[in-house]
Image (cartoon, rainbow, N blue to C red):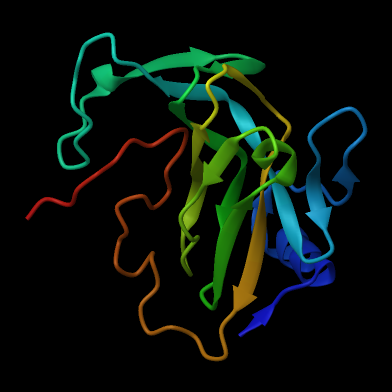
Length: 187
C-alpha cells in the first residue's frame, strides 16, 4: 500500500473526477491553505455548519440523534463556542476509486489554535461530500473560515482491490450531500 503523490491525485481528479471541484494549485496567501500538496489534498470547509447547543437540554445519542442538539447556520465565518463542537462539510465532492482508502488529518494552523478536526476514513467506493467534525478545545470562542482549508487528505492505494467496496455494501453515508447527521442502519 503506497501513499499517492500530487501527480496521481491530479490525474485521478482531472480524468476520473475523484475530487470536484479540484484545485490544482496550493492556495495559501491570506487564507488557511487548500488545494493540491506534495502527497495530499487540503480540503475546504463549506459555509454550512451545525453547531451543538444545550438550549434544549437534549442528550446526544448516536442511535437516536435529536436534531434539537444542533443549530444550523450558513456563514463565511463560523464561531464555535468555547469547549464546543460543530459539524460541517467539505466544499469538495469525492468519488473514491475501488482500490484507494483516504485518511484525513487536521491542519496545523487550526490545531495550534486548539481546534481539532476529525474525519473518518474515506473507504474504497465511497462517494459524497465529507462531513467534518470540529472540536474547539479552548475556553475561548474560535473562528472557522468557510471556503478555506480545514484538513489534509492522504490517499493510499491498496496492493490488491478489496472484495467489497463501500458502494457495494450500500454504506449508510453513500452519496451524502451536505452535512449528514449520525445514522444507524435499521435491523
